[in-house]
Image 1 (tube, rainbow, N blue to C red):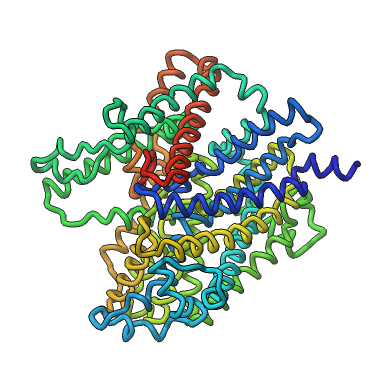
Image 2: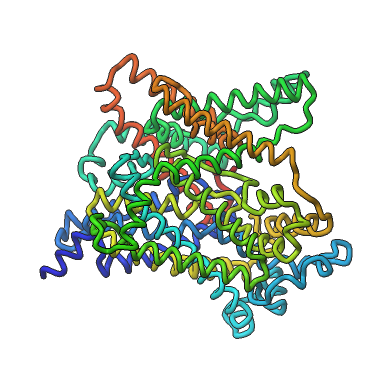
Length: 639
């Protein structure tokens, strides 16, 4: 009895694991359907707080409330609810249009779409390891459909690549867990970062009675839900009026020179982004939308008035993200020294008993993970210097993303075209990298194409949830790994099951277009040997320098209103799609804080929680309507 009570209090129980596994399989399939078979697609994990995970937790809590009413002894504890939620989140870092779509698209594309005209066979076929891709004999049915995965030929043809990439994902995800185990105390306990993304799921599970009985919360839920219900009905029945919340382009207002150089610009009013922005410090949200506006002004002045051809925004953003990652690591240096001391001397007076892993274990796990990546990449054909450079860039950007999520909690952090392969190509050129390394780098593109649903910040947030809910983090590490491995296999199964039925050629999503993007880019780089792109490198340096300068000024002058992370967020990427929602969230919070006072600000918290939850639940339900009835439905979020 005591063991059961201890397990229940820790959240790691057999029934929680079983329920989590069922939800992993169900969510893996749902993510595949919504991203590949729905038109328009709904990318449920393109945001920091996953739609599918929140809906899963909401349904669990509603069912658990019924259990408490009728059979309270069998109801789930809040720790169990959050452990299940974390399992779904871990799967979601792999599923849908974030990792699995890009991975499947990459490993199925190069042989199927090679032609004499594109010369792919001559340019890079010989550099593709046989264990990276499925056998060509199983791809015909995969693309044409009207077939089944469940015969020996496709199962045998897919066995090796599925196992290889599942092991690869498991090792990389574990490596990141080791890093999170090392930095957790510094960021969570010493610096006390805010972790805005976890506020909603934590309160839903830990304060379910008071949370769901709060009238203010239901007011926010009703506001967001009302607009999303109308939007969904308007999509099905255009005569029903609705307010357009997503992507209203105002480019038509800027048609004359120099204003037409402003680029794409749209207004949005996403309730969930407004709600999430409420929990972000004012200086961060202010900096984000302000730097976005400054960037548009720069386009007008430099491109519209001065005739500059290219501003290198992607490269500047890449430099900014590298700066954030390096600064985040540098600010943790004293703690890292203590970890290293504990690694060499187990008797060192550094207490790591409460950490997810003992520091010595975490460092050994990190070393083993890095050795695996080096050996795996070297065996695949990548040169050692490019391997080390790739790993360094990937880990630095991962650190930067995790820091931004823990401190700012942006609703989205799409960082398109900032993958390590692009950075290395810019810095060294294809001539120095070589065709073999370029090919392997292209097969890693799925890992970092847009950086949404990145595993490292989600793992760190899981540890923060565990701290708040007193979940046993040592057990949680292995539950997270279990969910990652099972989730990867479930996502492979879902994609292959669906594609063999419907055919990849008939899918609405990106399972073909991403493969075309990967190998068209590889062919261009392999066919045109280039050196260092010095203007682009200068742009990387510019973004890096501006971020460091903003950090220095902010460190020296407490009154400085511009936060470097705001600059990083607004420089390039998905922020252009929701900048006005951030502005609205900032403006509402400014009015509440400055005119109504701190008490009103505290009282408004449930309303904005409800705003997020209402937007998530109703929008997710529309996708379920489309999935169940196989009809196009309203989609809130399609970047």
